[in-house]
Length: 191
Image (cartoon, rainbow, N blue to C red; front, side, top):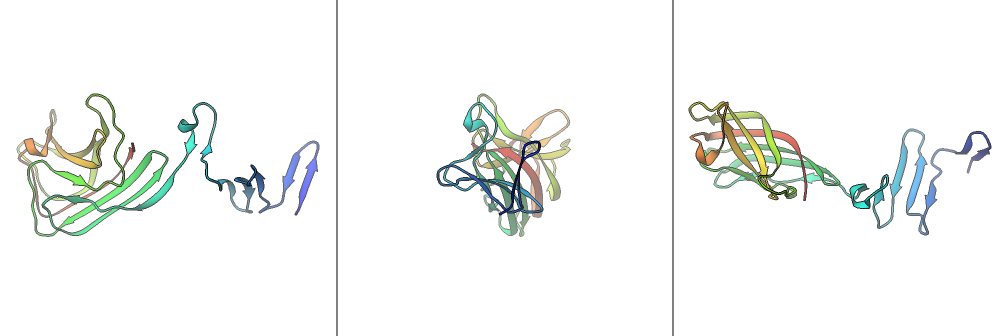
């Protein structure tokens, strides 16, 4: 192990030498020659800064898949992925319908985590833009479709916009046609 102690430059450790803190060595700080690491290898969370610990925790990193769906619609292909860091979740959604259309109020269900709730008319993610849309019939005067996550839920509600008003699909004459496609990527704050 190479450790250099110099009164003017401090303590220098060779690569891959872990500086451990705590009774069980739960906190590790080291450099592997290419990257630098601060790791919490114990049962607690890594807290950055000062103030409330819960506001400064890196308490969760998770990635995985989820299954998006719209009730009453058959899909040939559905894909959903997510990366969650703390309470921020980045998701992708891809729906490719198989010979099924849908009108009325439309919700994409199955988000991996419920969105954070709030007071009043609160939408955790408001203005989810669909980057790819096929076989959508917008109602008269409607120019766009978008989504939002209603207060504390784990679904995306679809809405339309006519340049002045935002309308749920139930109040719209818009229809997702047979073999429709919806794709989006967005982030939201989890509960």
